[in-house]
View 1: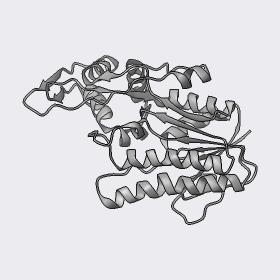
View 2: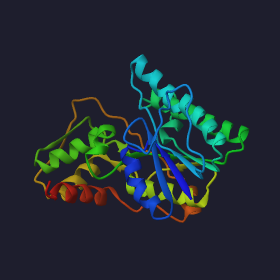
View 3: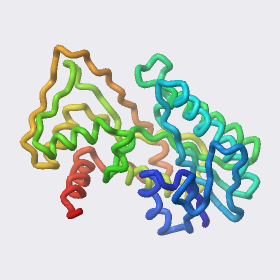
View 4: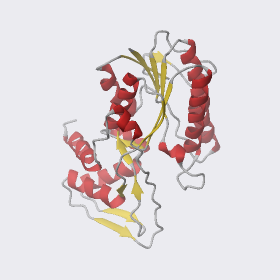
Length: 280
């Protein structure tokens, strides 16, 4: 089986590649540093013939400014539309699109923004063009992804700041009196799930979140333990509370693939601590 990973330089893609290469021939596609040059913002895109499965991991993460929002729509929605057509023209037999659980947020959620909106529309695009083009499509909706190494810091700065403070034995200060919930899933678990979905030729739309939500204080405690730190955790109760953003786990995907996420927050922190201890 030949698999093309679009967005092949992303940290998640780099985690996925070794798992897929154990079973498939893998090519990467992206604007630079990949086997195939591909820019989802281009007017017309093409992928090589002979690809069995296209995995779309390319994404723009948006922002509050109009140019950022426009880029999110251009890449995440229009780019996917073009990729569906390119995949169909090239004779691809399967497309796996990585969306986000944030697409399910209510419009009035403080965490709903251009990224979540574009991912919601991207799912409609994938489903619509999958039917129109008779292209089997799987849409996976992971929660917040973290992993080993600095490549994941850009999209999870809060999590990695906590690790930095624990590593430096600095106290970890949290705002408000609320201990907010979050849902993080480790990149290795997500990579194994995507790999299994590719091999199984899975179709449909599925949640992909960690069965366990964690609080800020649990995250901090896991980091302190992993780094054997003397850091303390304190809440500044005179500051505004931070709202929770946890998600209920739907196990449908995990049962279909016979794989459940296995890396807890405590284990993920230990993996990052071990990585940082290695000689540079």
